[in-house]
Length: 184
View 1: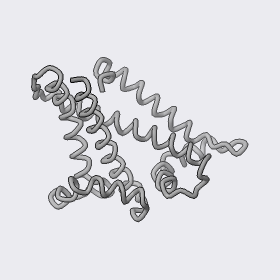
View 2: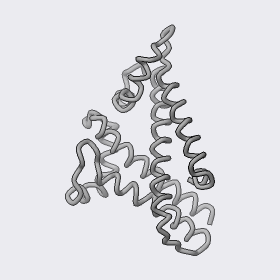
View 3: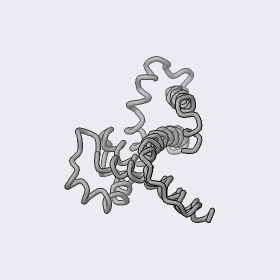
Protein backbone atom coordinates (compact mmCIF):
# COMPACT_ATOMS: atom_id res chain seq x y z
CA UNK A 1 0.00 0.00 0.00
CA UNK A 2 2.85 2.42 0.67
CA UNK A 3 4.07 2.00 -2.89
CA UNK A 4 0.65 2.81 -4.32
CA UNK A 5 0.31 5.77 -1.94
CA UNK A 6 3.70 7.11 -3.01
CA UNK A 7 2.87 6.62 -6.70
CA UNK A 8 -0.53 8.33 -6.52
CA UNK A 9 0.76 11.22 -4.39
CA UNK A 10 3.77 11.79 -6.65
CA UNK A 11 1.76 11.69 -9.89
CA UNK A 12 -0.84 14.13 -8.55
CA UNK A 13 1.81 16.53 -7.22
CA UNK A 14 3.83 16.43 -10.45
CA UNK A 15 0.77 17.14 -12.59
CA UNK A 16 -0.27 19.97 -10.26
CA UNK A 17 3.24 21.45 -10.63
CA UNK A 18 2.98 21.24 -14.42
CA UNK A 19 -0.45 22.92 -14.31
CA UNK A 20 0.95 25.65 -12.07
CA UNK A 21 3.84 26.10 -14.51
CA UNK A 22 1.32 26.59 -17.31
CA UNK A 23 -0.58 29.18 -15.27
CA UNK A 24 2.64 30.95 -14.31
CA UNK A 25 3.96 30.96 -17.88
CA UNK A 26 0.73 32.45 -19.20
CA UNK A 27 0.66 35.03 -16.39
CA UNK A 28 4.25 36.12 -17.07
CA UNK A 29 3.68 36.09 -20.86
CA UNK A 30 6.44 33.61 -21.64
CA UNK A 31 7.40 32.76 -25.18
CA UNK A 32 5.11 29.82 -25.97
CA UNK A 33 7.17 28.89 -29.03
CA UNK A 34 9.99 27.86 -26.70
CA UNK A 35 10.51 24.05 -26.62
CA UNK A 36 10.09 23.92 -22.83
CA UNK A 37 6.84 25.90 -23.00
CA UNK A 38 5.62 23.65 -25.82
CA UNK A 39 6.29 20.60 -23.63
CA UNK A 40 4.25 22.08 -20.76
CA UNK A 41 1.36 22.91 -23.11
CA UNK A 42 1.39 19.45 -24.73
CA UNK A 43 1.36 17.66 -21.37
CA UNK A 44 -1.59 19.69 -20.07
CA UNK A 45 -3.56 20.21 -23.28
CA UNK A 46 -5.59 16.93 -23.22
CA UNK A 47 -7.19 17.95 -19.92
CA UNK A 48 -7.16 21.74 -20.21
CA UNK A 49 -8.09 22.08 -23.90
CA UNK A 50 -11.73 20.96 -23.57
CA UNK A 51 -12.16 22.88 -20.30
CA UNK A 52 -10.97 26.15 -21.85
CA UNK A 53 -14.00 26.06 -24.16
CA UNK A 54 -16.25 26.11 -21.08
CA UNK A 55 -14.15 28.10 -18.59
CA UNK A 56 -12.63 31.26 -20.07
CA UNK A 57 -9.41 32.85 -18.82
CA UNK A 58 -9.66 35.82 -16.51
CA UNK A 59 -7.10 38.22 -17.91
CA UNK A 60 -3.66 36.64 -17.67
CA UNK A 61 -4.88 33.83 -15.36
CA UNK A 62 -5.68 30.46 -16.93
CA UNK A 63 -8.72 29.59 -14.79
CA UNK A 64 -9.22 26.15 -16.34
CA UNK A 65 -5.72 25.07 -15.27
CA UNK A 66 -6.23 26.62 -11.85
CA UNK A 67 -9.53 24.79 -11.40
CA UNK A 68 -8.03 21.42 -12.38
CA UNK A 69 -5.06 21.99 -10.04
CA UNK A 70 -7.45 22.89 -7.19
CA UNK A 71 -9.61 19.82 -7.84
CA UNK A 72 -6.54 17.56 -7.87
CA UNK A 73 -5.17 18.97 -4.62
CA UNK A 74 -8.61 18.74 -3.01
CA UNK A 75 -9.04 15.10 -4.04
CA UNK A 76 -5.47 14.06 -3.20
CA UNK A 77 -5.90 13.49 0.55
CA UNK A 78 -9.30 11.72 0.44
CA UNK A 79 -7.87 9.49 -2.29
CA UNK A 80 -4.77 8.72 -0.21
CA UNK A 81 -6.98 7.99 2.80
CA UNK A 82 -9.04 5.63 0.65
CA UNK A 83 -5.89 3.80 -0.46
CA UNK A 84 -4.40 3.54 3.03
CA UNK A 85 -7.43 2.97 5.26
CA UNK A 86 -10.20 2.01 2.85
CA UNK A 87 -12.32 4.97 3.98
CA UNK A 88 -13.59 7.72 1.72
CA UNK A 89 -13.93 11.04 3.56
CA UNK A 90 -15.86 13.74 1.71
CA UNK A 91 -15.63 16.59 4.20
CA UNK A 92 -15.99 20.32 3.42
CA UNK A 93 -12.66 20.73 5.25
CA UNK A 94 -11.07 19.10 2.19
CA UNK A 95 -11.66 22.37 0.30
CA UNK A 96 -9.47 24.24 2.79
CA UNK A 97 -6.87 21.48 2.65
CA UNK A 98 -6.94 21.63 -1.16
CA UNK A 99 -6.54 25.41 -1.23
CA UNK A 100 -3.66 25.31 1.27
CA UNK A 101 -2.02 22.43 -0.58
CA UNK A 102 -2.28 24.37 -3.84
CA UNK A 103 -0.78 27.45 -2.18
CA UNK A 104 2.09 25.41 -0.72
CA UNK A 105 2.68 23.72 -4.09
CA UNK A 106 2.89 27.13 -5.75
CA UNK A 107 5.47 28.27 -3.19
CA UNK A 108 7.48 25.07 -3.67
CA UNK A 109 7.37 25.54 -7.43
CA UNK A 110 8.63 29.13 -7.19
CA UNK A 111 11.43 27.96 -4.89
CA UNK A 112 12.62 25.22 -7.25
CA UNK A 113 12.31 27.35 -10.39
CA UNK A 114 14.52 30.02 -8.80
CA UNK A 115 17.04 27.40 -7.65
CA UNK A 116 17.15 25.80 -11.12
CA UNK A 117 17.48 29.20 -12.79
CA UNK A 118 20.36 30.13 -10.48
CA UNK A 119 22.18 26.86 -11.12
CA UNK A 120 21.61 27.06 -14.88
CA UNK A 121 23.02 30.58 -14.97
CA UNK A 122 26.36 29.16 -13.85
CA UNK A 123 26.36 26.35 -16.41
CA UNK A 124 24.61 27.42 -19.62
CA UNK A 125 25.15 31.19 -19.33
CA UNK A 126 21.99 32.14 -21.21
CA UNK A 127 22.21 29.72 -24.11
CA UNK A 128 19.50 27.29 -23.00
CA UNK A 129 15.86 27.72 -24.07
CA UNK A 130 14.78 26.41 -20.66
CA UNK A 131 16.81 29.09 -18.92
CA UNK A 132 15.17 31.76 -21.10
CA UNK A 133 11.68 30.66 -20.00
CA UNK A 134 12.77 30.45 -16.36
CA UNK A 135 14.19 33.95 -16.64
CA UNK A 136 10.92 35.25 -18.09
CA UNK A 137 8.99 33.62 -15.24
CA UNK A 138 11.17 34.71 -12.31
CA UNK A 139 12.26 38.17 -13.40
CA UNK A 140 9.03 39.91 -12.20
CA UNK A 141 9.81 38.65 -8.66
CA UNK A 142 13.55 39.22 -8.71
CA UNK A 143 13.68 42.69 -10.32
CA UNK A 144 12.15 44.59 -7.35
CA UNK A 145 14.59 42.91 -4.97
CA UNK A 146 17.46 43.68 -7.35
CA UNK A 147 16.55 47.38 -7.07
CA UNK A 148 16.87 47.19 -3.29
CA UNK A 149 19.92 44.90 -3.15
CA UNK A 150 22.12 45.51 -6.20
CA UNK A 151 24.63 42.94 -7.45
CA UNK A 152 27.86 43.05 -5.50
CA UNK A 153 31.05 41.78 -7.04
CA UNK A 154 29.13 40.30 -9.96
CA UNK A 155 26.94 38.19 -7.67
CA UNK A 156 23.17 38.68 -7.87
CA UNK A 157 21.51 38.31 -4.46
CA UNK A 158 17.93 38.76 -5.70
CA UNK A 159 17.34 34.98 -5.87
CA UNK A 160 18.40 34.68 -2.24
CA UNK A 161 16.01 37.51 -1.34
CA UNK A 162 13.05 35.77 -2.99
CA UNK A 163 13.96 32.47 -1.30
CA UNK A 164 14.13 34.16 2.11
CA UNK A 165 10.67 35.66 1.49
CA UNK A 166 9.38 32.20 0.53
CA UNK A 167 10.81 30.76 3.74
CA UNK A 168 9.12 33.52 5.74
CA UNK A 169 5.80 32.74 4.07
CA UNK A 170 6.29 29.03 4.76
CA UNK A 171 6.89 29.74 8.46
CA UNK A 172 3.82 31.98 8.47
CA UNK A 173 1.82 29.03 7.11
CA UNK A 174 3.24 26.85 9.88
CA UNK A 175 2.17 29.41 12.48
CA UNK A 176 -1.34 29.93 11.08
CA UNK A 177 -2.18 26.30 10.25
CA UNK A 178 -0.01 24.47 12.77
CA UNK A 179 -0.88 20.80 12.42
CA UNK A 180 -2.28 21.01 8.92
CA UNK A 181 0.66 22.72 7.20
CA UNK A 182 3.02 19.84 7.99
CA UNK A 183 0.67 17.30 6.40
CA UNK A 184 0.57 19.14 3.09
